[in-house]
Amino acid sequence: MARHQHVHKAKRRDLCQRCGKRIPPVALRHKDPFCSRVCPEATYGTGPRSRSGRMVGGLRIRTA
Image 1 (cartoon, helix red, strand yellow):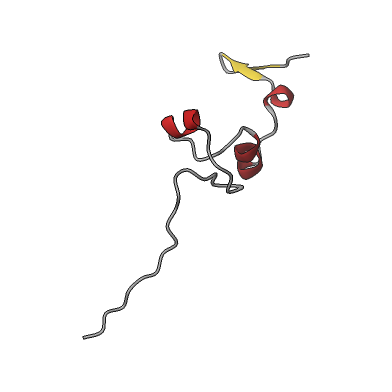
Image 2: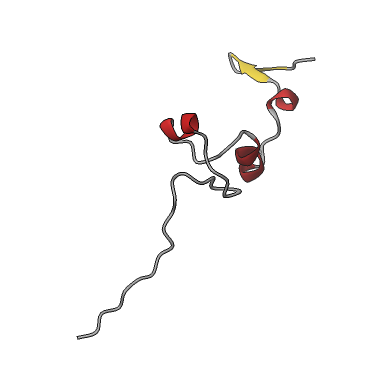
């Protein structure tokens, strides 16, 4: 009896979700799928932290 076998590409947890580079040990411990801050910014379309400012109590604080 022949079975249909699904062929899945195995996801390597030690490679960046965006660029495929190795993830640093600290990111692996925190289960972060990206190798650097630049990769999630590019993936999710968010800008650098310095450009977006920060939120304090629901108000956006601009940094100079």
